[in-house]
Length: 111
Image: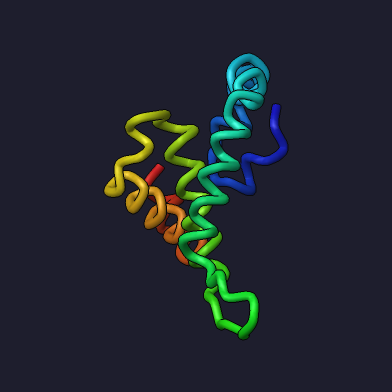
């Protein structure tokens, strides 16, 4: 039984251990193959989004930038190549992640 069900609103984790089995049998073994592609996607996104000027100061919206990075990895992990490169899918992942940050109660009501 998981102790996190009350945190994420997923009651299933309070009643079963299927999520633990999935982590141990599918997610954990896949991590070595995902880390380098995820790292490359994040690095590319950071280069595109963050100012590259090292001389002057720039104001950035860190939440927005970090959510873009997260969205790239979510698309990669969830859908894999080549689907994860679809700009519309990445935008959908981005918007859903923002909703989860700024309006978690609404996102939880979807499940």
